[in-house]
Length: 223
Figure: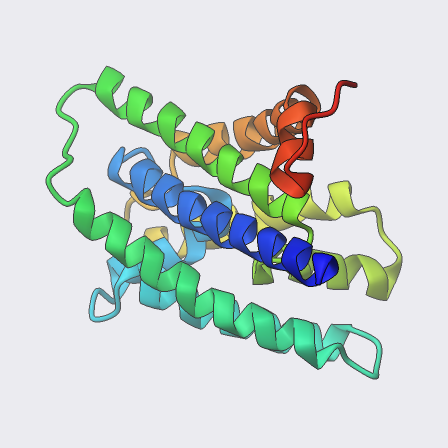
């Protein structure tokens, strides 16, 4: 019974982290300085083909990443994990659309306001990622895709993650340049979030260890 309760606690933390992640993505997007690397391609596609929202394009892109994992991962595949990834892709995409709708009237006029929203969005994404990391139950398709590449070619995760972020940002930029002749989807905000979020997640994971213990076990521990 305790193990089941502990697992439920972890899934609740993960879903809440997913919710924060979606709010952070929406806030960064509304800052009008580009978007986060993982959302660069869906956001660029939503600008080119606005018939689908950012959240819907996120779901479509996540499904593509899941299909890529099927070809990259060694058989037999972990269908339970792939199934969970599919479920959370729909949850994440709908949360992004919900957050974008809530922030629809947020239109920064001055550049400093855009920077403020960008930094706040990075902090919120980092908080969501922190909860997802400590929950350790399932990965978002973008993270799982990077892990699949690492397992397939035995590369180091950190290096592949950097290459993946750069590649997604470049592809998003190409989409905007070819069809929109501008870089609205990928700008300085994309670079800032790519550099800042990872560092913030490491900082939160290190500094909030007593909170981590309480969230996972209900008890505080000193480290």
